[in-house]
Image (cartoon, one colour):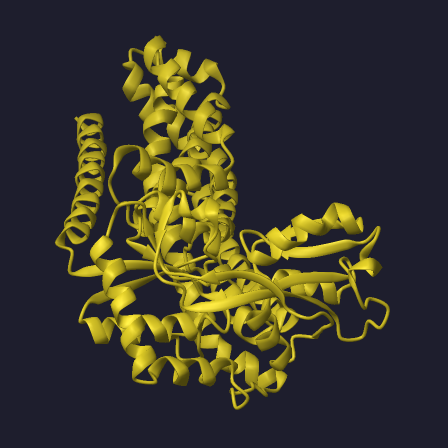
Length: 481
């Protein structure tokens, strides 16, 4: 009777999971079809065009231009904060309606996207460490490494002259990462969009500019090819209007003009003002960990018992599940679920759902093996003795084997909990704002890598040690009965 109840309970949870997922997907599709609120992807680590200020608001040239144009044209929008590459992939997968992220208008991109009229004429400059007096021109780069940010004009320019001047390109996903690479001496220079690097130098990012601006492509607002044309038309019309009424000039002057604000914070003041954003990211980390482990445990329970069962077909299904989701790297699984599946099937998947699915399936495969290993670690003689006394297979399993197996599994469960918590940081690549992504966002604004990463590391350490001690205490209680 108890086994029937347990089976019913597991089945109910699975149905709730499936119906819940369907509900999330359905709500997302309904919101997208309404046409009233546009989802705009951006890269909030690209100051001065888009970044998050101390109050958690999205600001910068792109953000203010979009806001002014939306008010002028009376349309609503919602910002989806992603990295630049993730934002472009999200647009390809129809996860967002448009992208504004300092995106250069190139022939290659025009084959995939429709662009607005150019709203900013950029260019490329070379930056070196402020303490470096040996690199003065491209000729000095021969035989050395040069840092670039993927998908930018700086990357394209560096690639075009790399063979001529004999240097090696080192790609990064974020601007602050290549700045740090130059400051630490791993690369001697970096190529960056002129307004971005000039803003960084003004904010004391530790670099200086040593070349004149090279001509580059202009920035534009992008939508998917042939889609959201009304949004593109409103953007173009609004851009004309705000240029005419002076709002455009005011926004540009505010961020890259001579009187642009310069941050001047001490170390402790910087950490103190960053803590609210970091604690919010930590809260998200714990939330995603708890929810995904809950579903991972259910998945592991089902497939774990299938793997130790007597049915060959079910054992095969469980083995295939474990092989697939344990064999695919977590970052690839995240990209496939968030970008690949929606693009192939033509629907919009919420980021929260994609993150939970990714973590649950990955952790579920490992929990399956933990349960299988725990059960199979119990001497077979105990099952045989129970059966010889007349106990049915299920009752012998529940009364004799599983209680002993649980004690064996507990250390592995604790280990999996810690691994899943740390794995949430990998999902920052699809724009999940957890603790690591929160640190990236703060660094993009302040250029203080050491202080912020040290704070983030300490926060991870405190949480993981606390959870481990609590789990150890519970393990001792269970072992003592």
